Amino acid sequence: MRAVYYESHGDPDVLQLGDLPVPKPAPNQVLVQIAAAGVNPIDRRLRDGELQEYITRTFPVVPGWDLAGRIVEVGNEVTDWHVGDEVLGLAFTWSIQHGSYAEYTPIDASALAAKPTNLSFTEAAALPLVSLTAWQSLTEFGELQRGQTAFIQAGAGGLGSVAIPMAKHLGATVYTTARQDNAEYLHGRGADHIIDYKSVDYETVIREREPEGVDLVLESLLGEGVAEAAIRLAKTGGVVVYMNNEPPEIPDIAERQIKTEFLHHRADGQMLAELVALYRDGLLPLPQIEVLPLEAAVDAHRRSESKRTRGKLVLVVQDLD
Ligand SMILES: NC(=O)c1ccc[n+]([C@@H]2O[C@H](COP(=O)([O-])OP(=O)(O)OC[C@H]3O[C@@H](n4cnc5c(N)ncnc54)[C@H](OP(=O)(O)O)[C@@H]3O)[C@@H](O)[C@H]2O)c1
Image (cartoon, rainbow, N blue to C red):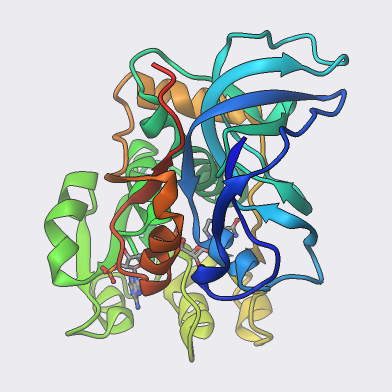
């Protein structure tokens, strides 16, 4: 099968396009013929050699966890999916080898949702990882309620693009940060307060409008003082969810009863199906999607490394329509 893979860690140029054997699904998995693969920052971070203490590699590694396509084989323990079903899913694993930048990928049956007919494969492939992460952060951990306030850092990225409309759907007032170029896009996502972090200090701006702090902070940036600022911005008894780091060790967390953790997404097909229904019915808008061919995986990783992409990048693997 045609696949993008790497045989050693390194910069985007370690990605090669070539032929690999079609993988076999385990008994609890299905084999999906991939139409499109979503690109996430974790794909390039793993390619670069990060997180080896948590996530093992078997080379050659095909990157990619987000996928949309059609089931072509079903493991013998799988009862709820059939050959021919059109699906999307999050092929997350702690042991990477067979990712979605390829014509075929095995994936746990429990990590799949049915693809609605009014979503294209490309649209579907953009959704799983960011949607599950945002929903698990806002609802399961954050318990965000109607009338509350949320600060979603880096609104124009893949995660922010879905988290903002989700927070609005839940009835919250949303603050976010972005460069001026992305302000119109984020108005369209429903953000109430878009802070141009290049020209003003976001902490000062939010503090002026919310002297007691916000109910929830979704912090997806790393950087000097960023983690501490997130805690300061949460109101007493509020929530801070980190996407990239453990909470800082500061007394303020216990003193003001801030609920906080480093949240790692969970592949959950049932939750994904509930979220897909919201996209299908127009209750959540799709993120902006830029489509590239599979051959452009190197370029996609370079673009992701620039941290300037808006919405999602998706690789088209093959035409299944
Ligand atoms: N823990 C988890 O399970 C999990 C899940 C998903 C993502 N993540 C992590 O969350 C982070 C965001 O993911 P993503 O998919 O949204 O990444 P992404 O799509 O690559 O984010 C790119 C966006 O970041 C924005 N940005 C860059 N620097 C910024 C700054 N200083 N202030 C505000 N915005 C800034 C850019 O907007 P501007 O051009 O407007 O600056 C750009 O649109 C990544 O580090 C990712 O690894 C973690």
